[in-house]
Length: 291
Length: 310
Image (tube, rainbow over all chains, first blue to last red; front, side, top):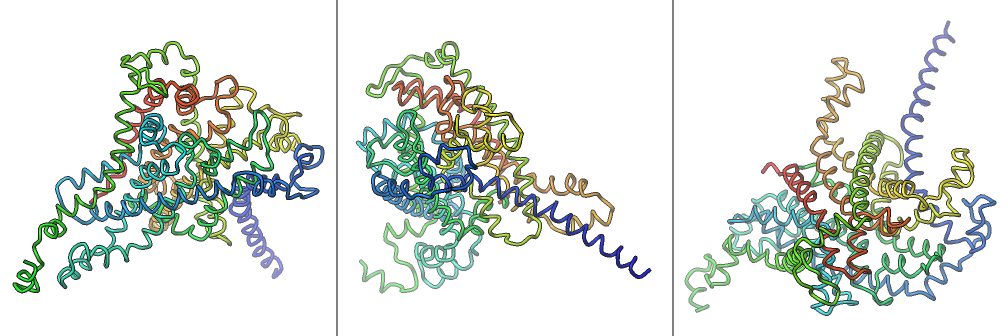
């Protein structure tokens, strides 16, 4: 009798464990497999010799004789290091410009009451929804008349068009969450409005500014279309354009180099996010959830 | 002057013109917007208006062209065969991937909303496809769909899902479009996932408890509590994703660039094809403007959807 009772108690427990595997753990493993396999494939590819790359008689999922030749080639005999420098310069400069503009604009739209503030806010939001696809052809004329072809300034000046609206929208939300009284009491104590903004509101909004900056950095690091069109000199290119353009000759794809370049181009943003995934998620959804 | 003001009253702010500007909400408000407006006008509003003119002109790379009315649009809709295909592809691509991204994202959110070990790691790993540069991950997929050395086909053959050698992904229009949709879905569903997850976490738990007391099944709880509460998030995410997919350039450009035989172009890549390598900027501008009416509707819908209650 006693054993029967214990038996009855054990089975549901086992069932629960199995049920958890079926409902939670296995689906999570499947999800991770789907999202991560392409990266695994990139890594494996970079360590294969050319003959092994095209040998599918044995399992292609593992490397039999690892080689570093693609990595050496990438860093020593291509312009990849230069593209990394270019991409970094562009990302940092356009992020700085965008943060500067959107902190000012965000503060203005979130805090100050004046005629047309609401309309301006919506106007900036609409520009966020205008895709570069609609603008890239006329922009080539603008860039040419400014003599900026093959010049990183062409990207540093155009990326803010999609970074500023995004950051401004994000920062408006942060500025609004800071109590107005803090600022008002600073002004009662004799601070001007500008001082109240730079010494009270901006320091308190630093987490928001940090995530806006992170977004802006990533978006400009990843941008492709403008960089593809405005930069033609090999030494002027950014990583996404350089890797997709220069490691393919006619029908010859240098997969080892291509994947090594693709991985290296992904590492900075991937690292950034592995440290800040929580801020990222809350920033990403701030607009959508608070609605 | 300065001495006078200082002596007059140390407590009251000095009244120089520029300081009056900085202290009035109206003046400062406009002033702070100047840098933003300047950049957006020069590099966004002006190119947009200029693009409208270009679409009505015979402009080429090196010459401004002349006014030709609706000639570009007429050429596209009546003569340029790949354009019609690109137009249908764009709708198909957006429609199909949005359905998959929404359902996979919903599944991902419901899954990640439960408690399990390594939550942070799992969330970061699941988000990776959406974070890293699209063209670079698309390159990995291009290699995975390689005509002769496709690891996808290798796996499918070894699991006896298809017979050797498996589909030649970029060899036919159907499979090439399918490949485009797979890559776009893979890249896009994590965004749906984390946004919906954030929405899920704002739903009060007592709603579910009350429903359970009333004897509602899991499915009923989902349709009567979860879905209605998620509506605002779903709407915004759907609209944003539709806009981005509709104007997508990166995945189609890198993965197929129209192959085979210009049959898998979307409007963005076809506009590029005419405008940049083809040099017909006016024609290219006209093609990308075909996106505009639908985008305008979507943007208007987004504006209504995100309207903040204040």
